[in-house]
Image (cartoon, rainbow, N blue to C red; front, side, top):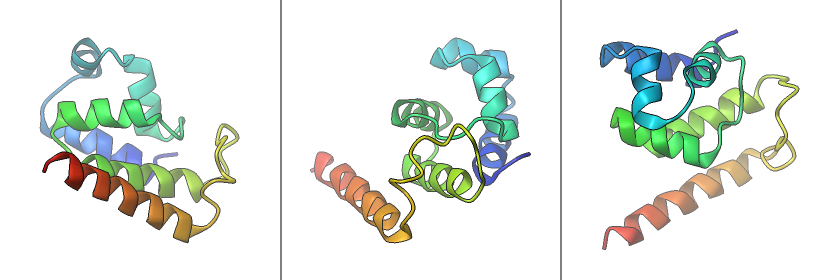
Length: 108
């Protein structure tokens, strides 16, 4: 069952005309894991995975974090180990704003 993050990742990869193996070779993230993310079979990729993919794809990592958070939070995934952290949408919003602020400060 695809989710918003999965659709987004697949769309970027296809737009860049990359195979799963191409991404694996450049990012060291397994092709099978990327495939499962794209299909919505995996949820809650690590911050490192999101950063690695966003850097490689030239995508906004905070947008990917939002998609990951909302895609994983709105579906009853059994692997969703951090549901309790993101139950309140205000906490998610504050986390995203904090990450944006850190990014701004690191560029000064």
